[in-house]
Image (cartoon, rainbow, N blue to C red; front, side, top):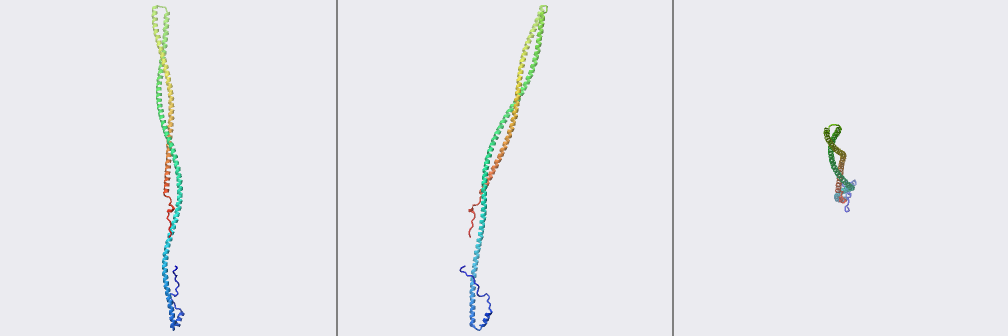
Amino acid sequence: MDDLTLPQQLSFPWNPVVTENQVTLAHSVADSPQQRVQQLEQILDQCQTYIDELKQQLRNQQFLEDLLARTEETALIQQQAILTLQEQLHSQATCAHQLAEMTSRRQSLEIMVQQSQTEIQHLHQEVDRLLHIQDALEAKLVNSHRLLRQREHDLQLLESQQRQAHEEKGLLQTRLEQLQQELSDRENDIRDLSSRLTQANDLIETQERVITALQQTQGQESSKNTVIQGLSKTLLKTQKTLQELEQEYQLQRLQYMKVQHYTQEIEGRSTQQQARLQKLEAQVAELQEQILHQAQQAREQETAIQHWKDRYSAAERVISQLQQMITQMAADKPTPLNSLPSGSSP
């Protein structure tokens, strides 16, 4: 305010009071008009000065009011600017705090992403390992099923051979019983033939003694010869019968020996068949045990495959969740610094 002057104190009082000296002076000069005129002129000058001061005071007051109004307006603008700056400073401080939090969060997210990627790599390696284990187990399971089918086929063959051996054993047993019965019959026939041979020999010996006795006795030759001839014919028939009995006996002995030999052979075959049957039964029992073991092993392998499949599915779910989390982290990454709002000067 270079062209402005502050209001000065008025030289003329607002309520002028006539002092006692002035009253005395007025009374003392009452009789002098010239002095009174002078005094009035002085008073008039003072009034004029006071009026001028009042006018100047009025002008100064108006100026001060205008100045005050402009100052208030400027102060209001400055206050608004200050408020705006304070809001901007607060916003910048908030943005700086948010930026620090976002930077810290971004660093944490980057660490989490790195850890997640490392975990994903480990999980992929685990998945590959699980796939190899699963493939190996499935190959073993296929081999186990193949061996199981082969053993079941072998068991069917052994059971068929076992049934056939049982049938053959039954046939051999029946044949053996028939042969034993035939041997018994042959033995009876041989004993009968032996008895008949003995009787024939005894009869021949008796007839020979009778013929010898007749030849030694004395009597009519004609009757004696007739008896001797008759006895000789009987003797010849008896000898012939004896030869036939001996032949039949030899034939029966030969048949008996054949039957006996065949019986022994059948007994040997029956013994072999029994041994074979026992061996087949042992093989069937062993094969059944192997089939049960193989089936149990196949069930265990199927359970193991299901376990590794479950672990594989769990690893795949974890990988999918981690990838989704990484994608969400990439979508929710912090705002760059140049995109934050900047404060404007008033």
